[in-house]
Length: 84
Image 1 (spheres, rainbow, N blue to C red):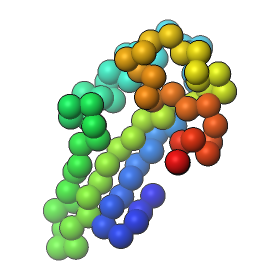
Image 2: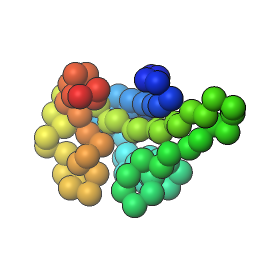
Image 3: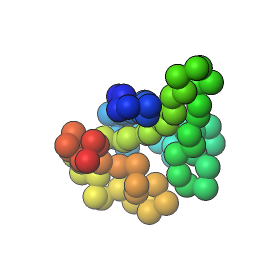
């Protein structure tokens, strides 16, 4: 998605909790794309500078019941909530 000089890449993972490695996926994403629990901002370095952020979304219609509080902010239960 792009708005003015801001680009946002959104990874939507529809697998939910069906795969045991969900926490490993979140930790891997956070290690690359977050700093202090917030999105890192990357600059493209081109003449028309663009800022790029990356967001991870885990989609599950029953997101409210996800057990790990530490990871709750990644879970969304509707497509509308992803982009709110």
